[in-house]
Length: 441
Image (cartoon, rainbow, N blue to C red):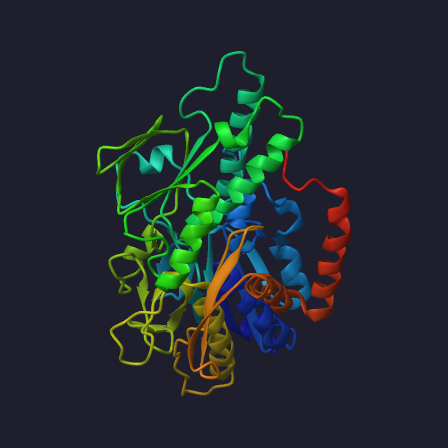
């Protein structure tokens, strides 16, 4: 069978779920010439999103953890195409990508279109600033690697400037404000505490982190991690208090300016280092995408088969999809990594059925296996859920830490296989002996 006669599977979005799906389909349908799989992403490389707070803090060097889409496609039987989707023509069954420009603004790739038989949308989510004045202009989100690296650069420059300036440290100069105390916010707070102290230890003798560097966490809800069980919230709050992170709970940011944030309690915190980690939404262009149904945060509405409500040839999963937790439920699946992983596994089976000519597709039923929150070297806490446990079990300490670390290794196994992941892990263990513990540039 010729390539142009193959069933065309187009996956838009190379996050954890989209990349895992493309890799699985490529290893089977792609390599066996049963379908043509194409992955589209606006970036050339993939980084596991839960690592972004560590990149922002400088705890890891992203060059060592990023994956090249072109190489992954070459090894695993799918094609990669660089670009950002902005249009969809459902009648022509065609996706259009906007022109791609380099850092200097030169057009490198002109507008292109791609045909599909089956389209899968897995473009994830972006931060939701709720239209707060100044948030988009003066704060940094942690949606992608570029943003994480930009924040780290600002943080590093602020510390170096404070080290070398002749005047005393100005109010707000080394003040970090994190808006939103979900998993990203609390993990970033702990990671920044560790990283700034390690950074100061490398010859920055004029900086006293305990005196000069302050980390502030602002959350509109009355407790940290409002989406997780109260016991986890309390355990995390206790750890952050030990680290002297300033917690402002039940307080909402109403304005972000060039020199800080204002809250609804007339509080002004001076800072030029503001991270916005409060809430998510799907990318704005989905709200007007060829007539497909969306909700108030731009998520594509899908049935339990993960097919969009108005087009059976278009699937959506992960953070960009509003999917019922069970068939017929009015409650939607929460935007969590475990849900995207489960849905990717289901879609792998679904698409194999479609290519094989089968009509009956499986339904997705969300399974909550619990949550883990990693506070770096200080603590890891969480809860496990499942029928074997008969409910929820609180865990913390070494066991929780090992389970958290295993999540990333499981992602790598899905992309590279067990043997490659094992050698990669051993290599990092040995290389750590000759590397700094924090990124110093």
